[in-house]
Length: 87
Image 1 (cartoon, rainbow, N blue to C red):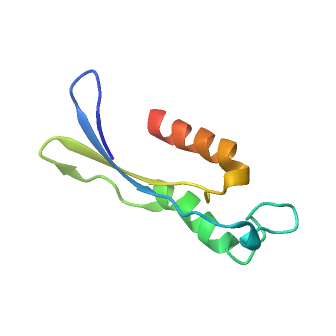
Image 2: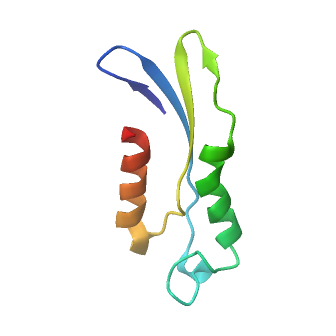
């Protein structure tokens, strides 16, 4: 995703999104304790642990991991996406 801000700085965001069907949910209807929970945890932690001090031609790079996308959890996903991009 390329974003151009009002100050004309171009930011490059590499966003990792993984859709997951209901068959992967845990007993609470989420993914935290499911067999795929480790992967969602990895996606959410990658941003803080990755070395993203990459600057190329005055462009800024940001690595973003998001919670799994699921239609029934769409609102939570959209809020996470919005928070990550606007922060």
